[in-house]
Each structure stands twice: as C-alpha cells, then as structure tokens.
Amino acid sequence: MEEIKQATYEIIDQMTDLAGKMSDQNFTRPLPVLLQNSIGKHYRHIIEFLEVMLSGAQSGEINYDLRKHDPDLEQSRDKCMERLGRIREAIAVEPAVTLELMGSYSREADKTFTVPTNLERELVYNIEHAIHHMAIIRIALQQEFPEIQVPKEFGFAYSTLKHLKK
Image (cartoon, rainbow, N blue to C red; front, side, top):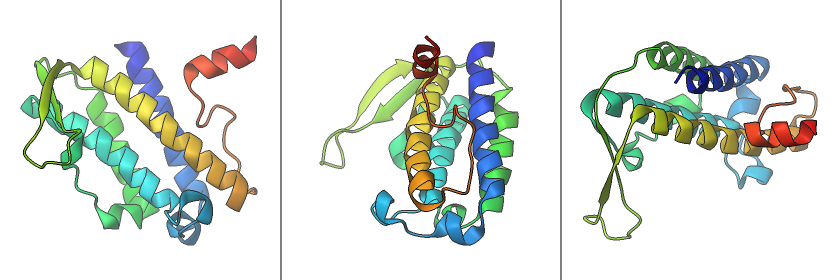
C-alpha cells in the first residue's frame, strides 16, 4: 500500500505545483483544445473523484457518479490546492472496511451495479484516472501556455516512463 500512497502523493504534489505556477485567468479560461473546458475543470474532476473515494472509504460505498461538480472549485486555484492538501493528509489513514463500488452504464436513472472493491484498488484507479487527465492538461499547457513548465513525468503513466527509459 505504501507504494500506491507514494504515487498518489507524487501526483498531488505535481498538481499543486502546477496550480501554483498558473494565473487564475489561465486556470479558468475555456480552451479550444479542451473543447472549451478549462484546466480548472480537469482539476475539479480529479479532486472530486479522490474525495468520493475517501468519503466512500468511511461509509463503505463509493459512487463516482454522485460527485458534486462544484463550480467554485474549478474557479479557484487556492481551493484546489487546499483540497489537494486535505486529500494528501486523508490518504495517510487506512480505514479497514469492505467497500462497494456503485455506478451505472445505463441511460436509465434507476439501473445501477455494485461490485466489491477496496481502498488499494480505488487508489490505483484514481492514480490512473488522474494521470489521464494530467496528460490532457499537459496537451493544453503545450498548446496554450508553453511558458509554463511541468516535470517531464507530468501526465505520463508509470509504465510509460519505465518504457521510455529503455
């Protein structure tokens, strides 16, 4: 579990560092390369998934479909950095509960599925989910804000980084 936590901390630190380098205007600006979405919306999305996971670790049920879609979060780098800090602290706690992942791939509101899961599995999912969105953010940075530098690892899967070292 420690390796998984360390990867999560690294992602949180990279996201916090980037948010600190951006202006509020650039963070919230709709970008053509993101289909008129902003980098802030991608941050909100990643943060809310992590928060749903942590909340579910306490209740025993995780349902990413029920996240808040908080528009204030996507408009504030400071709120994003604050919430990322809280997530970092919360990940240090390992609740020993059996978890159930709930969701729906149906267009009908009342059709859902439930599968057993655990905190380690959900952290792994959230790592991959965050990296995916960070890769999209990286594309937007290169297109719209080439002056903003990120670490070479930003937005790359760990397996890809290992492959590139060969």
